Length: 165
Image 1: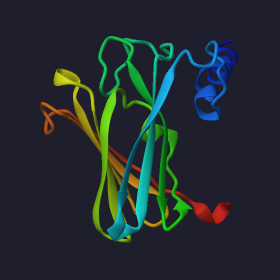
Image 2: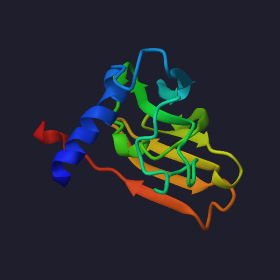
Image 3: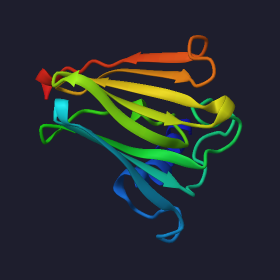
């Protein structure tokens, strides 16, 4: 029963975020905007799609960055990072728990390594996320509290076995 519920949940709630299908109601009952940044030194660009007005698809009591004990006003539905015209790997887990983003930037001095910085939330739930990339894709993510960065942070490492594709 749980497996069926989870599959229905994924199909009904998460999949439309990536396909653009208006399953949650009529088209136009929510809005989308893009945050974008570029970095000439690394020949890189990033676009973060933010959707507002979507129904809450997670338990409001679940922990996420940028919203606490309530459904977020805005969620990130896509992160596209390109370098030299080639799209880099950015898994869903890198941004699924980041809510209410308000700005992004790219930083780095090398074409081989650069970072996407996402800032979001407000006051006690403010956060800064730093996604580090190499020439293939995302290699690490660090999210820290805007108020207590040393005490409240999360680090994730990513590895890909691209030889099996």
